Image 1 (cartoon, rainbow, N blue to C red):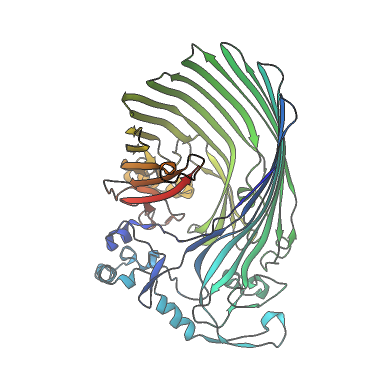
Image 2 (cartoon, rainbow, N blue to C red):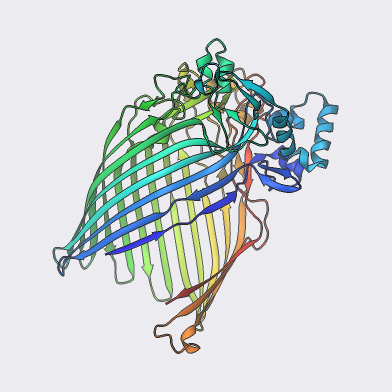
Length: 625
């Protein structure tokens, strides 16, 4: 029996993607709109924190010479969070908001003036913290019937800007037990049972009032859209007009509970020329939402426990290996399984209500693989081809839709994908301790269905559109379709090593905006025209490359310290990535979830991109014994 526990508290200022126009104005691919100067120091509005300790208790029971039972219980608890700006009845504080950019200005003279100001003053293109504080300092307001108490008036500096912390508190328990038994020299069976219980608590809290004395827990969009209904503006009807201060919860507050149990069985059969295995798994998944506040917009669907959604799933997997001789093998694997939908994609807008997508069902995954392995003393080769198909996947997007002039929830169903390709890996020993290593992954990862979307208003239960066809078929999944690597690896008998690799990536595409791939997006546009292609075509990124190096040395301490009984090494490692300092690597990005339906102008809401760092390095020291 053993017990292990570990925890890693982390905190980091996060990088924000931005439009190319702002990147060019800043003259820096690493332009980050999340920070600004406060008292001469950089302050990031988007800070990520994580602290989720894990404890694992395991028991390894050798029942007899042929049978063993391994059982483990684990618990995870803690939280992860990110901070962000929030505002009430105030101007958008984001420095790269599209209305603040030169391209939005109709007057060319004024557009050039805005451009020059942004180029010449770093404070114009970053968050204006002083401006946010001054707005709150000058805000003296009275809140009537505060905290739901009639006649209770609270007067003071009401914050119009705050830094909020978006928190996910997780409590997770896992149990698994695996029984392995050797029936004979050639036959081995493994069976197992697993159970997982997870409770995620989603909420926001006030991190910084930015000079104000209090904030009010109300929904400004509910107030705006339903002025005749005072309740619509309340985030919690159980505590209307709630006065909140730093550390208090504000806005959405709900739990998602997930439970999953499974049993599985696998048989391994080994013979002189053939090895094969077959396995099956059966699982049961359930989840529900529990609202902790009664939202004024959805008083009957936000508070308390929702319906519990249950899914039975199963899968089968089998594989065969044919041994040509002691060094050459051919293998084939295949599987078919169903999987319960992810709860994030099942609930349409879990922050405010318990509505789920229509026809909620499990996704299906079919996968096959065929390959060859050579294991010779001086040459190792592995080559394989694969095909994987995904059916019935779901997604939910929330954004401001210019066609409906409203914040919407875009519930997408019938998402199908096909991943297929070939992979090759080679390791050849070319000299004493020196090896040539090469790898290639050539694939095609595409969406193979026309997806269907249901559009609902975020602040009401109104269905704005239904069965909207998203022409997503043959679009590429946003990942590198091709990747290649070649390098040298040297291992010295004196306990040091060095490897250098050149990596090349090609056929990468940005994640696409589904509303631009609908009939209404190209309504009135000449089919096949340049504008037609600008709207519909997926953005392909330029190919990329890096040169990386990794080295290490292990010092045998026993020669120096005779008291050490076991072989003990002091290990030094260092890595240098992107040795050529390539700063034009687009590591990710996306098309904005907005589109100009009036002018059909794709440049009004251009894509946003992240760039990978140039030359960077790390070093570590450890002890191994």
